[in-house]
Length: 376
Image (cartoon, rainbow, N blue to C red):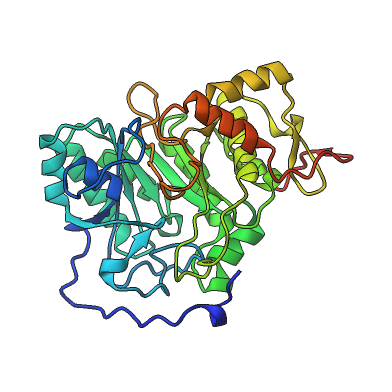
C-alpha cells in the first residue's frame, strides 16, 4: 500500500473562480450521460440496461474529506478534465439540462441517486436538487448521505420531505479500525465510525421500514467475517447492505493497492445476499482462522441453487417501484476488460460457470473454524 511519501507528485489543480459548482451543476455518471445521449459510448455487454441515474455534488475545492480510496478526496489534485470517480469519467452538467434530458430522451431509468460531498454547502444543495427532480421528473429518488453533515434528525426529515423515498449511508469500511485508517484522523479526515452508525439508526426512524441502506467496500483490509458482521449489524437495524468492490483510483493514497481477490469478493457477495435476502444470520456461518467463510450454514443443494440463480452476484442497489434493482451501476467496480464483479443484468450460464470457479479461489481451506463473534 502506498504511503504519502511514495505517492507520485501531482501539480495542484488550479482553482478557477468560474468553475461550475453545485447546486446549478453536478457530476453525472458516464453510464447515465451515455444513456441520456449526452456522451458518446456504449456498454460492453449488450445485456446492460442502465436503470438508475447517479449524480454527485461538485465544488472547486473537491470534498473536504480525505478518504484514502476516493477520487474526489481533498488531496487528490488532478485537472478538472482528468477527474474520475470509481475510475471512470464523471462529466459535469447543468441540473436543468439533466432534467430536460430525463424527460425527453427514451430510457429505462427509474431512480435518481443524489450524492453529497463532505462540504458544508452539500446538505442543503442536495435537498434543493432532490426537490427539483421530484417536482419535475417521474424518477424515484435516493439520497446518498455524507453522514458527517447530519447533526440532527431534522436534517434527515428535510431530505425525506424534499422527495427522497430512500437513503443510503456510505460507511464503506467494515470495522472501526479500518474506518479510522481510511476515513478518519490518520488521513486527516472528518469522519467518525460511531457517528455514521448513529445516522444510520436515525434514518430508520425517519424513513419507511426497508428503505435505508449502507454501502460497504470489500478490499480495504477486512476479513470476510468482519465485512459480513457489519452487514449483519445493519440487517439487525432493518438496513440493507449495498456492496462494492474496491477499485484503485490513480493518485489517491490507495492508488497502487490491488483489488480484493475475486474469491474474497464472491464469498462476501453470497454472504450478504443470504443475510439480506434469505434472512440467514451470520452466527450460523463458520469461518477459518483467516476470517474466510468455510460454511454458509445451508444445505449444499440449496446453496447451489442460490448460486445457480446468479442473484447474489448482481448489483445490490436501491429498487424501482416493482422491487427490482434500479441502481445497477454498470462497471462501477471494474473496467469492461476485467471479469465482472457486480452484474448489472442477470448472469448468463457462462457467467455462472465463471462464478462457480471464482467462488472458492484464494480460499485457505477449512481449519478448526468458528462461528462468527460479534465485533460491535
